[in-house]
Image (cartoon, rainbow over all chains, first blue to last red; front, side, top):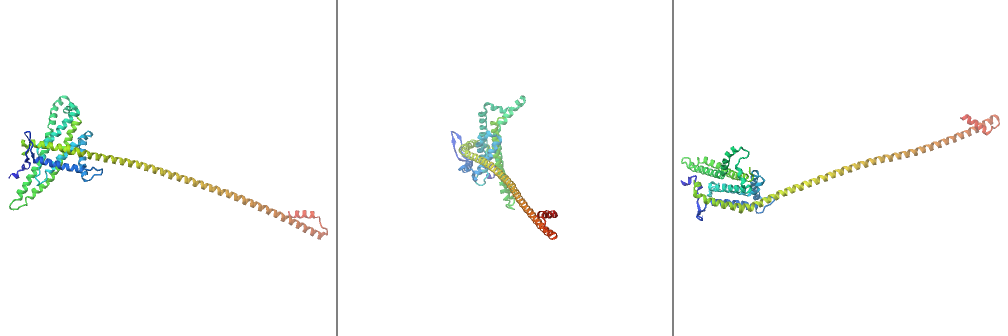
Length: 251
Length: 160
């Protein structure tokens, strides 16, 4: 019955135990699928830029399409000063997208690293630290004026400031939980309807017939999950660039 | 839920950092700038091509304007020359006409003069004949031949 448990698909399996100075850093199926995503992205990018041409080929055109998309997101949210951070946002976007999409492949025992809050939190913390570092480097201690609501009467501002601080500090968690929850929910849903297909399809009197409905639902859900995989990668990159904008263009 | 198993956190976070570092420094940083440069180069090329095309169009427009001006001036010249030729020809015809008229008039005068002369001569001859005839008649009637001068003056008086 454990195979029917919708949470079973998120189980971390240690493939190669590893420990560095007492800390457990085992190579798990999650790490494996992160590396697979990395490999897919690497192939996509290396083949796309192996011989950059003024008139792009298919690979290069595909890569340029993604690149233009990210440049558009950064440009819209950060402006011209954000050009330096395009590679960062691009990395975040393609990595999250690759993890999300690869996790949707059936039968190959695929695992979605982005369905684990540990992964999304680590990614969100990377973004958060970069935002804080960029903010402090660019504006020094002036960066903390970010928490002071501009043009507001000071008693009210004094009241608002703690809220601003909390909302700033909570950003990595919301960023992480949004992605993790979306991925987890989608996969659970697919799995639940998958078990429905089996249990209803094996209904003795009329085999297969009743399995068709949850199967149809699952097909539709798969399409929806593909969309969500893309949208969540976009949202993650979008929010990362919005946070970066806060650090680069203070208010 | 395996997601909230504390033991699962560290290995995944470490591997994520490793994977993301490789992705960012190893892959994206080495390949994306090449793509960016290519896109910039393409944009520059397109801008340059557009510039060149714009310049070429301006040049073409200029040449066309020049050509049209040339055609217009040539037409103007041709028209002027045509008018000149026309007026010259008219003048020449007039001159020739005048010359011919003068010649004709001269010829007419000459003809008239000779006609007058011939008439005078004829009249003179008629006078002579008349005087002769009158003298012969008077001689026959009177038997004396009148003086020649008298006869001719009498004939002239009778003829006039």
